[in-house]
Image (tube, rainbow, N blue to C red; front, top):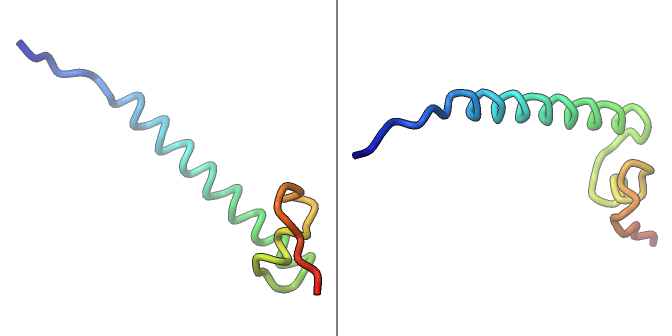
Length: 58
């Protein structure tokens, strides 16, 4: 016998977390655009927000 599991709460929490993450990413991109002017891998890796990435200087 199968009974239907209620996953509505989990689905709504996942959607909420995804929306919050998208907003955080948008804010970070806007901030980097204002500070740096252009965004590419090297500019992001050299920024303070991502110290774990390797900064490539030429």
